[in-house]
Image (cartoon, rainbow, N blue to C red; front, side, top):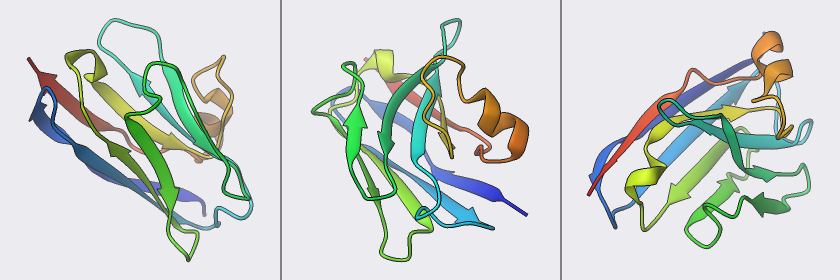
Length: 124
């Protein structure tokens, strides 16, 4: 059974840092490109970054230069390091075995390649 379990997140002041973790079971990241999505309150879901099976990363303009995606050597834990956080980064963050920017990881949500979500709140 495929599962993604997230941890981390919380509340931080603007300019601070947080790290989110995403642990996979039932598959490894050698098998799927992985993405991080976020859903701000009252706003559209956004794919903020991704990492391919060969480790290439890509970031949305809203987080480029501030967020970093990485994976551990076992290819079962993925991280989202978030630096210089801004109030507009406030959202629920999801890891996913999906990188489609157009449908908020619908396939991943339907198939289990979707984390449970983690709240990140940034205060000014």
